[in-house]
Image 1 (spheres, rainbow, N blue to C red):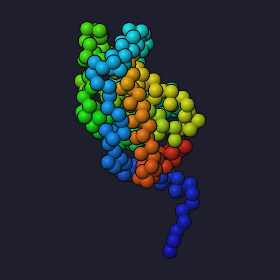
Image 2: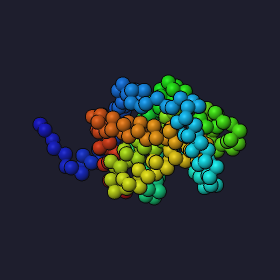
Image 3: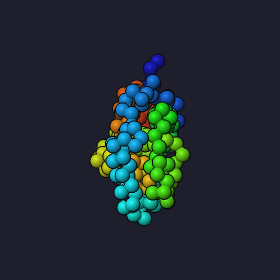
Image 4: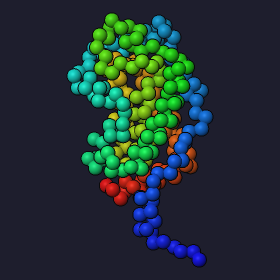
Length: 225
């Protein structure tokens, strides 16, 4: 006999069940096939890019430095000011679980690009020009992982909070640009991260397993706001 549960009960089951471990969502994503190589070290383009980075670094403010330190690791809650004060740790476990999976998959992609191109960061190429680095990274600079994450997370969160789409996109851009302000990246690294982040977001959203889990997250958020 088929028993049809009332719709509120279906919603309750969706909310209390743990997030299905459907990841990985990405399959064969290669950043080297998507992005162009960075400019050659000491080429005219490279020189202009690094000169621009130095100007931005020298114009940084204490607030820029503080933001760079606070966002050493980009978390879901970096977007809380854009989404709303109800976004608190532990309140939306399915959203946090989805974010954790996406974050891990993005890291693998950005690491693949960094290790392929091995582009020096500004403070690595010209250490005398960068006496104080708020968050010195040891990995190569291209593409920027912060910029990639900021862009991808903003696009995915906009599917959950569509009314905040513009504010989320702007925060995603700022997460990347802050890395230029504190001396970790050049603009070229950041722009590559934006392209990569946008492509990754579209790849996640095209995956049926991701869409399944995203639907559960949307139900959780709708009930908990």
